[in-house]
Image (cartoon, rainbow, N blue to C red; front, side, top):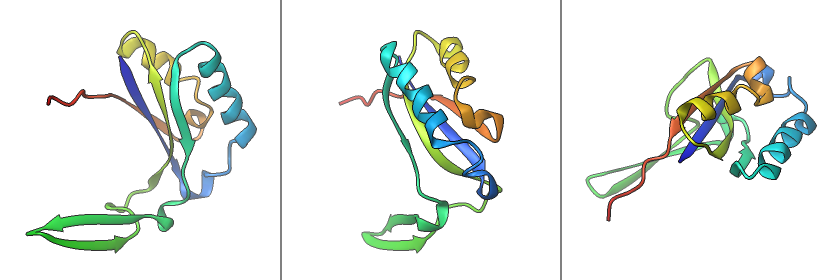
Amino acid sequence: MKYLCLVYLEKEKLRAVPDSECMSCGDGFRKSGLMVAAEALQPAETAATVRVRGGKVSVTDGPFAETKEQLAGFYLLDARDLNEAIQMAAKIPPAREGSVEVRPVRELNP
């Protein structure tokens, strides 16, 4: 089953973990066949939030919600179950500085 691990960090801690350490973690997951994809994200102030209401598109600069931590990146992992996904998330280096939300991917019904 696929699990999305969302990495959250405070803005001041976005560079607290070296990129090389995150890349090494991803390489390990990839070599073991557990990683589907992973990417780091630009800071939240570079985001745009898009809404469509009544057929009209509105765009707001920045993230949808103001929070202390921001979405810094993600790992899409293929794990046996939630327990294994949580164990894998604990190995993601930014978990030491922020948090990693582990969420099962929902298959869409046609």
